Image 1: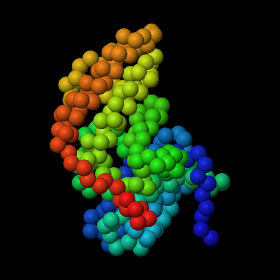
Image 2: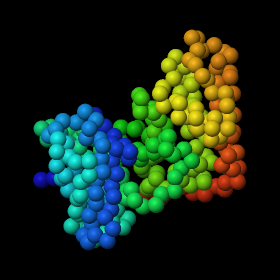
Image 3: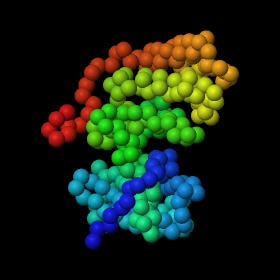
Image 4: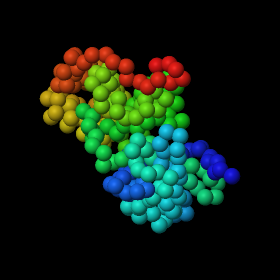
Length: 263
């Protein structure tokens, strides 16, 4: 009988915590899982770790072992796959007693495949949405989680991969608002205690975009002067971003994949 997992309370495993390296010319498909999530302290030693290879309608799941004995790098073979072309990988951590899904990376790709970086790499991780994100009909959202900083969540229903994020059209229509939301959260919503990750965004804004004037200290009270000056600075940063990457020259194209016959 197929395993049935309880999805309650699962934690997202970020791409920075798990990478899949496809072994070149291996027949059948062999990959190396490189991971750091097992040392987080959230998982128990006997939690089961599984990696699934997926290509269109074909799926193969391999149980790697348990958290307590998981190595930083683990080689896994998928006999059902002749190669890794067009395949992606799903990583799961499961409580063996309750079958509760405690952690998941919903979509990992070949980490060694050449990628075109986004303009906000590496300060803004990007992840495909999962059930708990509750995007609804939205295409994207920025998720803020404690000290980890912001993550751009894109709809797995609308986008088949991360590629649209790197496109000129996505850059023009989404990135400026993402930047605005992140700076607003860091320096206005968190006025009484700037998060540690805000420093990276200050450096990005001042040194890469060339827009000085970021708040240097939390105000005792967020008075109108602070709010006006900070809002004006954020507006200036967004304008510099658009100008720096020449977003005015971008033409409109369809970014999403067809779903149920509709776009």
